[in-house]
Length: 215
Image (cartoon, rainbow, N blue to C red):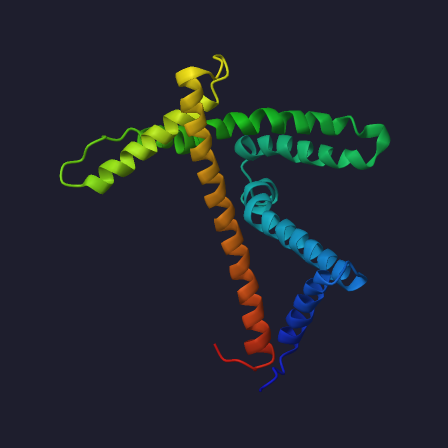
């Protein structure tokens, strides 16, 4: 057994135990660790956003040297709109933030819809157009049939213009089966990822902190 002498390891270990204390009941130690985690995460995100986005795209071009008036003065508009967002803290001027929020909600989807359509919709449609028979590869053929058949059955389940009776109802029930398999696999993957995180923290406590077990 070799207990670590590093202050950083001790702080990480105590915070980990503080989070684990929630397994017993909600307590002040857990709340402190939770609030500390949220605060540090928010602070890290703010600093990262400033140095990766705001500073190179707004501050440096607008106030840096050399200064190109014909190109950089337009950046005053996003700067003013950004400042308008902070008007939410002042009751008399909170209406100014509506201009910024309206532009964000209008411009952002317009800019992103092309990327999402190309990356999600078009690619998924292209990936679903598969041959039912691949010579010399029976398992690939079976996989293609299941994928395309499951996709069509799932789409029929979400087609509510026709009552789900008869053949349509049967296909819709098959679609429900594929949906349940998909949800189950997604849930299982999520649980596996969380268990992996738990194993990692236990290994940290027993190995890096206490030195009881060497992995």
